[in-house]
Length: 128
Image (cartoon, rainbow, N blue to C red; front, side):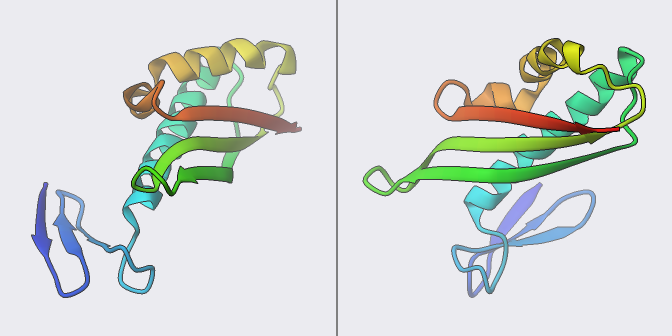
């Protein structure tokens, strides 16, 4: 991974491709958006894997970021993220989801990297 300064921010180069990052929405992804995206998608991928291992495969998972609390007094630091998971699947057992989310939280590297500095709230609904 490599990052180079541009007129409006930075361009990141990875094995997959390039990404524009800027404090201005018009010129790229904002750094806090990348942080939240990493946590959301890591959690979603781990959730998918755990559901499959528990023989409750999801046919679709979507993640809505319901809330991002930032502290303007301390460098606009991200202090809370609320992720809402919408899980679709015929064999999803709702009574097992608290354990599924416990395992998801424990095994998501991005989430573990920011706890306890950032409060992560996870809610969910199941669509059969």
